[in-house]
Length: 374
Image 1 (cartoon, rainbow, N blue to C red):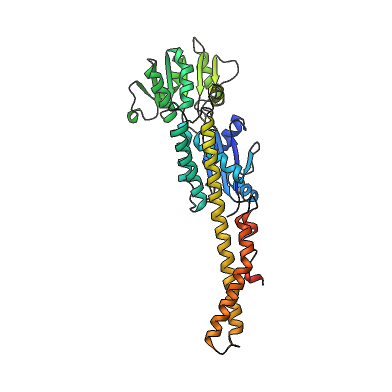
Image 2 (image 1 turned 180 degrees about the vertical axis):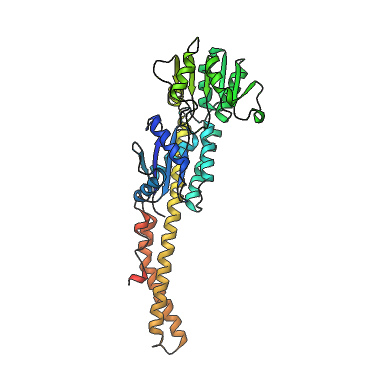
């Protein structure tokens, strides 16, 4: 396993439409065993334990091509980024809890074991610690709460969906006395103290409520453009439509009576309002650097072990070659010790040099001492 390469397609690097297509492609793809794939409403990231060529091949396997607009990160820089994402420091609302849950779920989809998995596990642990010790407690469903605050003045709000984001918005509004209706596919399974509608009334909600927050996990538009235009035309007042879904649930036609806010716009509002916590940044950075040193040390230990194993093979062949010329078995053992000492002495310099490596790809060193090439 070589250097760690992370390719990131995340807000604000990619437009909403590009990110939506990436999420849709991931829904059809089978993630490779050696890739960490994180897809949320605001970011899509792929992390591969290998060089850039390997990462590019994994991206092609996931998306059919290497998507435009991504940011390439390598080694320590990639590890720092992963730790910041897990801690919520790369999120519009500082320390948002949802992204850590999403990182943990993505970790569950990582089928390879070993040090790469251990690296992601350390990112989860650092994210949890940063929230507990260095960050203020953010509201549950952070972006949903921003959306709820925008919709609250309408007095009556419909929530499309019953997932974590949708229910966070619904609970926030209900706690403040707003008339809330949750529109979902299985209302009998939803625990909510307000009104529940089945999803076959979603179009009705778009015509009678002054504000609608949509946060479904649908893979396609809920209502096509022409039908949405008809529904909006029947309204007596404009609609506030907040779309937290990825891919988006709606694309309102031009000229319709609607104020449409996408998740990117909601994220921008959260970004503008957040306060930075220097202590959290410092703690997460330190944890990332420690994890990177651990990751590299494990790699170096494997390389050094491989060198010693190669040297032992040379010792065995050398002793076997000359053992027939020695009469006393004690001299054979003396020969073995002498050759072994010479081999380890020869390796002592390279081993010490490797232990002090900084930045050079370890895989370039793994085959330096290969007895089969001698």
